Image 1: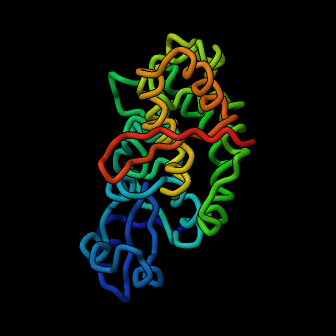
Image 2 (image 1 turned 180 degrees about the vertical axis):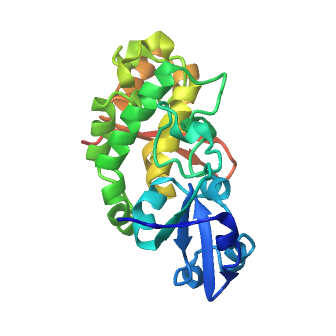
Length: 264
């Protein structure tokens, strides 16, 4: 489609709720019909109406939205003008996910972090695929049922990440040496565990992550640290490999009680 060319002064005068244009990435968009439906309200748009809002748009939206909606809103381009500088991190080859600002940890957008290495990228990529396939589609059903299927524990173990939910270091003696993302057991650290839990949280169900992980997070560590060798052999491996389910219980006197279900 051939668009009309404008200079920036032409766009500036369209700054009212019934006549509202903006510029994003050198595209002139007529958003008059959209402004009243803007999720953030009309005022935030009117404050910048008629102006170039490329940087502001990118700070609060994923860039794919522009590709999706611009064809229906664009009426022209800005002639003889360079677009506002786009923040390079969002287009980095290492950027990950939908790039919704503040919707994911900052390092997903390739902001520098001294804590995350290639091994953390591998775990994140693998875990996102698992969550989108095995958890997100069923969350609503499980919330309504107020329980998760026992098969989910086995799937998590077969994907080699459930075994890491008792913290670092990786418990090779009880969990084996296969680690999510193809990591070596000695590579596994608490940041890998954090990433796994972050990805599960994307499913939007506190109940699911609590049912799935909290027994391993806070019920199993006391067994690993303080139990006899006999009890460890009986409990730890079965729990880490999804064969048995462990939970934490507190009595009225706040004594810690660990309970393991050995039913199939």
